[in-house]
Image (cartoon, rainbow over all chains, first blue to last red):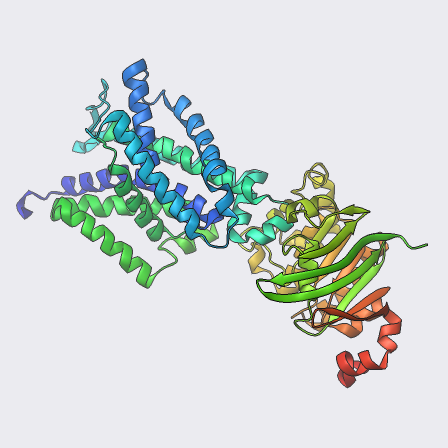
Length: 297
Length: 243
């Protein structure tokens, strides 16, 4: 195998890893925001992404609307879905001392969605094939698929959007404050339900973006959501819980690890290595790899 | 003619099965400084938490400007004009000084006034202006206390509740904090003060309550309690008598 390795190939593996890793990254940002105010890992995040991928698929096949154009429907829809999910499912449980209840609701939601998706769309893998699906740029012999590049651009734009929102708006600042100290946040007048709902809205909104990104890049089936959630959790652990940029970088790093591992070992090894990295980071640097650089920013 | 801004009537507060406050009644008159003093664990902090809605009372009534507030949530209590600076300051330490102050003006009543409130906070605490883009967690203890009070003032409180504002501060900052409390009071802000620095607290208080194991043991004007031999012996002692 080693005789095939060229500089160009290595660059290609890096590019692939980075491009796909941004999808993990925005999923992890959603997890990070929800964890911030709710103190739970929202395990259904991956399934929400898959659900949004199916919605994108539906809009594409039934109405013939381009997947990227469907973002104008999917993003507002997923923001509203996030607010709705919080108020219907989590509102009561969020006030409880025992966060396991909220976590169990997230697990229940994940399995419910998984089964609903299977009933509606069957368990067969779906894929969105457009005229540009197989198109790729080839700068210096490196293959850059246009759908993956679009995924990267969408991820970067939505990360920048989330950062601006958290930094510049009063409710965004309130989300950051509540993530740090919920009691103190209520003492300045912040309603926990308000910030929880906003965190959910952004989390599911990002799931919408990731869903469109994923649907245009990979074939997907209902059960891929749980694996995606696990990847997002690994990204979050690598990047450090509570840091938006860290979560994105964590996702990119995980994408790189997977890309290199599946080439040099195999697809099976790639997952094993990802989880090993997850454990090693948690053991030796539980605050995440990128935390210090974020605090300065 | 007394003018009660806040009336607490016969409240019981429990943490799980443990009762922290037993049938406590206090009243706070408008534009006065009222001190709550007593040993650790006497229930002073709990009483403030109950007023601000963090730890609701099991029994009893709390009236603010004549309206019952016992069932309100903390975010609603601050909206009607009661700001609580909690023990240990509890700033948002990864947020900047400016962001902390802005969030102080979160209540809808205070938000339109934010620009003026910021100006007022910076003129009251010029130190904070120079550090406005610094993370709150990077400030010294005294600066953090000022920021915590500044943040509470951003909501334009009628009643300001301060929990141990001088705890852990250097003597210079302790003096600054007590001067500040008097200044704020002169600006017609009513103060409810919990302090372990009993001598200083009684000196500036118009009215004071001594709490003992969750019950009111004594009350009177600050001067009366300061002169009381039992208060002297139990809470102040020789090491404070010279200051």
